[in-house]
Length: 290
Image (cartoon, rainbow, N blue to C red):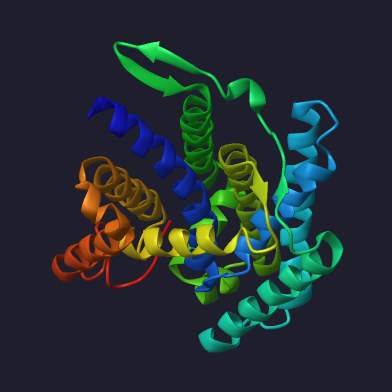
C-alpha cells in the first residue's frame, strides 16, 4: 500500500503541474486552453533540441522557450479574442492546438522519437522495503516547491494579488486600475512555465516524443480540474492527486481479467464522486477564485 501511495503521489504531482497550468487561465479568463497540451509538446521537442547541453542549461532554455511560446499565444491569438464568448475562446484554443500540432508534424515528422532525459534519476532506492525511484522523488519535490511558490506569489506579491482580484471579478478589477494585459500575460507565462516542467518530467518518464504527445496530458488535466472543482485553483491539485490515486490503486488491485478496464473504472469512479459532489470535491457553484 505504501509503495502504491508513493507511485500515486508521483503521478498526481505530474497531473497537478498540468492541471494548475490550465486552471490558472480558467480562473482569470474563463478559458479552458486546450492548446496547453501543445505547450507540453513544444517543451518536449525543445528539450530534444538542447539535449547535448548540460541538463540545467537545457531545462532552463526549455522553460524559457515554452514561456515565450505561451506569451506569443496570448498576444497573437487570445488577446484579440478577449471579451468574446466562451465558445469563441474555446474554438480559438482548438484552432491553435491544431496549428501547433501541424507545425511540429511538418518539422519533426510523425514518427516517435526517443530521448533520454534525467537518466541519472533512473535508479531506485530501497526505503523500509519500498522501492522508490529517484525520478519520483524529483517529481514530488519539484512540484511541491512550485505549488508553494505559486501560493506565495498569489498571496504575497502585488501582481499576484491583482491576479486574485481579476479571478474574483475581472471587470471590477480593471475598473479599479488593474492592468488586464499584464495580469493575463503573467497568467500565460506562469502556465507556460508549469507546462515546461511537466514536459521535462513527462519525457523523462516515457522517453518518447510525438507531435500529439500533449493531447492525453491536457485531457487528464481537464478531468482533474473538473474532479477537484472549477471554483478554486488549489482544487485542481486535489483533483489531480485523487485521479492519480484512483488510477494507481485500480492498476494495483484489479484482478488480472479486469485490468484492461482500468481506465473505464477510473472514470466510473469519477462519475460516482460527481454524483455526490456535482461541483467537484472542493468546487463551489458561485464562481472562481485562486
